[in-house]
Amino acid sequence: MENPRQLAFIALKAVHRDAYADVALDRVLSQSNLTAIDRRLVTELVYGSVRRMRSLDASIDRLAKKKSHQQPPDLRTILHLGLYQLCYLTQIPSSAAVNTTVELAKTNGLAGLKGFVNGILRQFIREMEGSREQGALRCREQGAEGQRGRGAEGQQLTVNCQLSAIIPLPKDPVERLGILHSYPNWMIELWLEQLGLEETEQLCEWFNRSPAIDLRVNTLQTSIEQVETQLQAAGVSVMRLPHLPQALRLTGNIGAIQNLPGYSAGWWTVQDSSAQLVSHVLDPQAGEVVIDACAAPGGKTTHIAELMQDRGTIWACDRTTSRLNKLKTNAERLQLRSIKICPGDSRSLPQFTNIADRVLLDAPCSGLGTLHRHADARWRQTPASVQELASLQKELLDCTATWVKPGGILVYATCTLHPLENERAVEWFLSSHPQWQIAPPPSDSPAAPFSTAAGWLKIFPHQHQMDGFFMVRLKRREQGVGSRGVGSRGAEEQGSRGEPTTNYQLPITNYQLPISKNDY
Image (cartoon, rainbow, N blue to C red; front, side):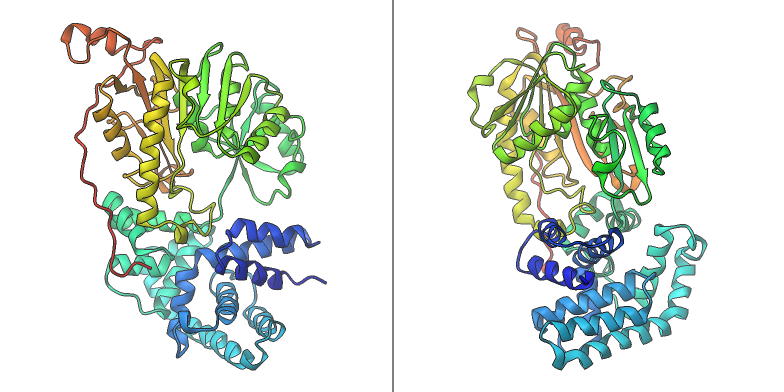
C-alpha cells in the first residue's frame, strides 16, 4: 500500500533541489494509485510545507540546537512534514503525525535520528499545549475568539496566535510578519508600503489559504443557469460572483475537474474571476482583428473569442509551442473557430504592425498576485528577478503597441502586485508614447466597479476575494488628432463606442526596490 507521506517526502526532496512544486507533485501523483483522500493529503502536505517553509524553519530553530539550515537536508524535510501536520492540520491527531514522521525517518535512512525526530515533535506538542492559554489570550486580543467556528479564517488566526506564543517573534513588523506567515522580508516591505500593517497581514493570511476554483461559462454553447443546475445535480456546490456574468465559483470537494458535467461538451473552462475581468476590459467586438500577445495556455484568448461571438480574427501568439498546443486543445473543446495560432516571440513579429483593432498584452510577470496558487513562487522571485521582468515588460509594451491601429485599444495586464511591473510600467509607457492615453472601462462594463481614479484596475485578493491582478486599457489616438489642443478634446475623450478616455501623464518615478539586509 502506497504511503502518502512518503510520496510527499519524495516531492519535497525534489522541490528542495530546485524542482517546481507543481511539477514535483504531479510527477509523484501520476505514478501512484492513491485514493482521492490520500491524493488531497499529499497535495496539502507538499504545498503547505513549501508555503510555510520559513515558519517551519523558525520552529526548528526554536526547538533544536542546530539551526534549520545546518540540519541534513532530508532530516529538515521530514521535520517540515511533521511540524506542518502538528501546527496546521489540526484534523490529524498529534500521535499520528508524530508516529508517521518517525517512520519516515526510519524508512529514509535516518533510523539513527528517529529519537531526535520524536523528541522535536513531542517538544513542539508540549509547547503548543503550554501556549494555549497564552495563545488564547492573544487570540482574544486580536478578535480570534469570536471567529472560532467560522471556517478557515478563524482557524488560521487561532493557529497564528498559538504559533506566536511558541516562536519568539521580533518586534520589527517586517520580520514578525515574515516569520509568522512565511514570506521573504522584501515582499512584506513591498506590501507594507502599499497597504499598511493591518491589510498586509490580511493579504499574508489570504495567500496562505487553498485557492478557489472559478469557472467561466461558455455562453456560445450553454447558459450559466444550465451549468449551475447540472453541477448542483451532481452534488457540487456553486455560487455566482458579482459583476461577472459568466463566472461560477465551486465550493467544497469536487474531485477531478474533467469529470464534472459539461467539461467534455465545452460548456465551461476553469478561469479565475480576476482573469475573466481582463477580457471585459479589452471589450472585443464581433468582426474585429484582435491579437493576444502572450496567449498560452489560452484562458483569455478563448474568452475573447466568446465575447466576439466567435466572429472575427484572433491571433494567439506565444513563443512556447507546447503551451500553444494546450491553447489549441482548449479552443477545440470549447468549439471556437476564430482563433489562429502564431508561434514566436512577440518582440519580433513585424507582420502585425498597424493591423489590430485591439491587442491584449497579458505580460510575463512575478506572479505576486497568485502566490496561493504557486506555493514556491514566494521563494523563487527576488527583487532582481522583478527588475528583469520589468525590463521585459517594457520591451513587450513597446513592440505590441505598434500592432494597434490608430484609434485602437491595447490592454496591459499582469497577475502581480508589484508597482514596478504595474503603475511604473504604465507611467513609463505614457511618458515615452505621447500618442497613447488611458481609456477607463465604460460605465456598463463588468470591470467598471474595479476601476481606480487613475483609470487602471488593481485587484487586491484580500479586498476582492480573487487573484491579485493589474490591468489598464490604453487607447491610441486617431491620426491627425492633436495631443494637447483644447479644440481636439472632444475627439480625444470619446472612443469609437463613446467611452471616456483620460489624458493621463505621470512623471517617471525613481522607484527603489525595498531590499532588506535580512532578506530570507
